[in-house]
Image (cartoon, rainbow, N blue to C red; front, side, top):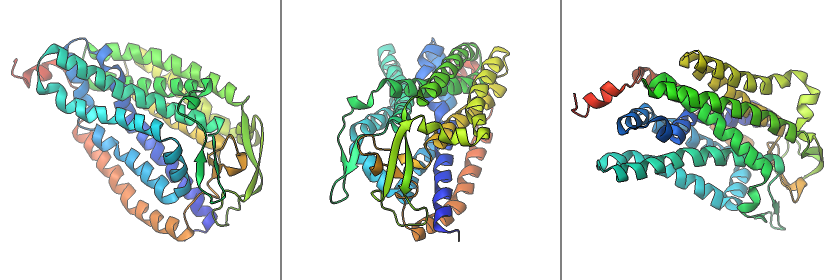
Length: 377
């Protein structure tokens, strides 16, 4: 069994893998949901777009559930501090996510145009709001969250929901929303027939440009933000105690790893390159290549943020030394070891099942099929 330090690093990698799995799979669901009302101009066109994600969205959310479970099992202090302090923001995300299954179920119950239009807007909100708020959450990690520990080592959150809406955090939300719309429309261009495929490609190209520009601007802004740097404590082999370290704040600290290891700059470059490749492929009517490129852009973007924040998981803006890192917020060595064995058994099963589902659901969804299955042909 690996030592405590290695187990903590492995679980940091597993958390990143689960976030990437969620963003790549459920991310295109959110992107399609956020745009389907505009890409589809008739009821049949919108139904075709919804049919492209309805069979797979629930399975894709397994990654989200696994991510939450991983945080609970491996980083309980992060779980406790974030869920207690960010309750309203998480409730808002959960509310938006709940709109999707409700919308899928109830949209087709009546044929009345106003009924379906209402649920179309609900599904649009259910796609756009989480995509935006996930980015806002990441942006706030770079700003630091206003929390500290009291004398009983209880997390105390001193901010509010509106304090999270910092301009940089909102920019990060734009990055996330544009990225997932690019990803979702690339999937839609691949999965549905004309004329929705062509419209999706046009929207995807615009989203790719917005994402690339916002991502670059956010990167420059991060270089000017005050970041956290551990100067003492946080023993990689020691017990988890978030108060047993000293942290220094200075401008540009979040780019320290990139300055120390030049090869890491390939990560943000790959993020921009993925967006450019997706833009080119959508223009050339090659949606398969565009989707693969957007997958690469999503992966590189998450890795870029993760590497910049390392080893911090939840920095504090009010008490920097109380920020949570992978070294002082983890479960015990035994817990991490037992959970690692469980992951090694279950993760290949999930990957195999996901691949099988997409293999079974392969092929385009056309308007002719939609009409035929409703008895119009």
